[in-house]
Amino acid sequence: MKCSLSRTKLFRGARSQQGFTFAEVLAALVFMAILLPVVMQGLMLANRASVIAERKRTAVHLGNSLLTELVATDQWQYAGSSGNFSPTHEQYEWELVQAGWPLDDMEQLTLIVSYPVQGQRHQINLTTLVADDSL
Image (cartoon, rainbow, N blue to C red; front, side):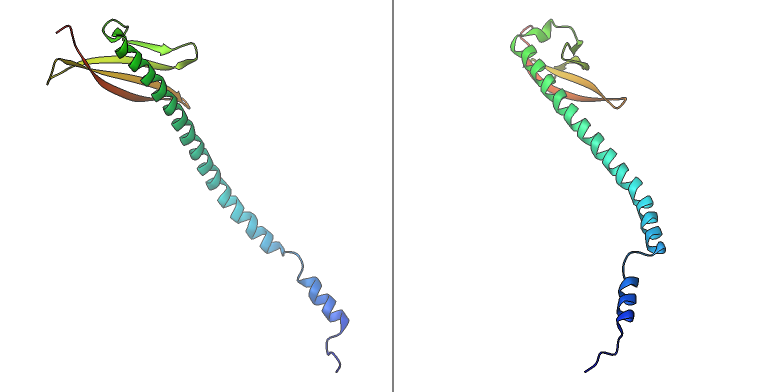
């Protein structure tokens, strides 16, 4: 049996199947031009969320340590009502707010820790009750 296709037709057909056409390349570039800004925006949001979470974790750790120290040493009665965590974390600021607890002879202590993230201030509140021996 003899093959009906000649060698030149086989090579010509194989050559036309290689590569992409200009229209296909142009369509891929347009698709990338639309998709790339969306992906970059998503990456920026994910990065910001991770920075906020990391700084919030640090703020909780610092605030918990300070509040525990103030309560354990009874310095909450005499300590200044605000400050920062210098020298290692100067950008983290704290404020201690005291309020009477209506049910018992206790004080409600709220430690507010604020910290910056990309030009905006965020804050967390840590609250505990302590026995007020002065009453």
